[in-house]
Length: 271
Length: 271
Image (cartoon, rainbow over all chains, first blue to last red; front, side, top):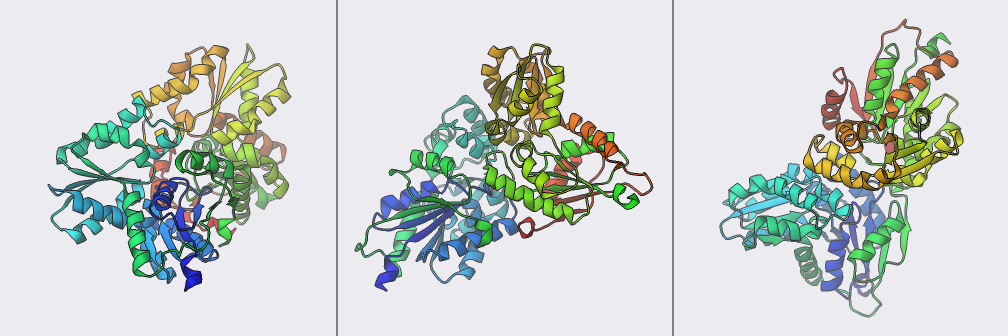
């Protein structure tokens, strides 16, 4: 058991976006070691089918298992939406995704029961947020909108820009009619433009960033399963990607509080 | 030999963009059958490394060879830029890419020897257009600009839109100082916003669409090698993708003159 608690937590994403979740885990669980995998060769997942996202996720989980992880965090909303159940069947260690904690936080935050969801095409199409929200409270009205230009805009660095404002305005236009009081930023890139999104919806709408709640759920789960790190060994962060480690490191250094070392490119198709 | 000339031509792209090249081949070579492969599971290639793009291209060529193609057309600028030489070493049938014909057309079109190149990040970084252009004429000045937002904007359907105009204006801003008289649309998606690009650079700048010149080069090459279809058998177009055939068909129907049938999803990682 002692060995197991000091094992790392496996965190994966379609690319770099999941680093915002890793960052939150580092902050809330400073004693835990992490193995992060970003599928930079096959990014993005947001426009891809369930079959393909499940297959890619399976390969990544196989890879993470070779690192003897004690738990798996699906830090990508699309993979959470499409592959969560499949991954839980694949392994017998705890699995946390970002959708379920995000939905829980939104449900507990809303007062008028009108919740908006922003996500990738595949996440929105999956209806997963509706499913979780209605399980908590069938009275909740959910308005979802796919925002395919947000990721490219964030990756181009247009975080505060008139073009981003214009596109945010269009995507949120219809949603305004529904008088939502809570809006889920259902893709790991979206919190990076929360400034523009927040101005568009106004300060009375609560923005939910699932990363925070995911780290909190992870902490509870590890405590419950007696898997919290014993604090005996040094914390270690290892990073693996399927392509282009230089670009990954550049982005990671802009998101994480610590410099990224130990980034290794692996052939994920071989898993 | 008779059998060989009626074999199909293999055409591949990272996704749907290469259909603009396939369309031009259909127009200029109406007697030829085509097998088109779009790597919709791993799209886009434009931000990925040479190693990864070469590996993906190798797998696709292995797949096309199982269809007994008589020639291969690399309909993706990024794959042309990064994997052309590797593919030619891999096979002993003719290989045509889109970069070399595009560069040739630009060199013959320019009068003031100032040529602009728009492309993906990886195409621009490869310096391949400069290499071909300087091989033709070392006096040519080449100005290149990576335009990572063009593909997402086209895929979101914003072909004539103030946001697209704004982004085109920014990407082309520096280029205007160079007084280019020829501009290569060095990614298969870009001709779809040639209206906005053309207005930005003005009517004195000639826009080069490599698709046209590629089909022309292909025709010359097939004639030279005695590989032009004999016209005895019926022309056939088959489409294969690595993910999401419905989305592929929807896009294809908006680009091609004929309705797309026979679209099959295959597991490209197995090749």
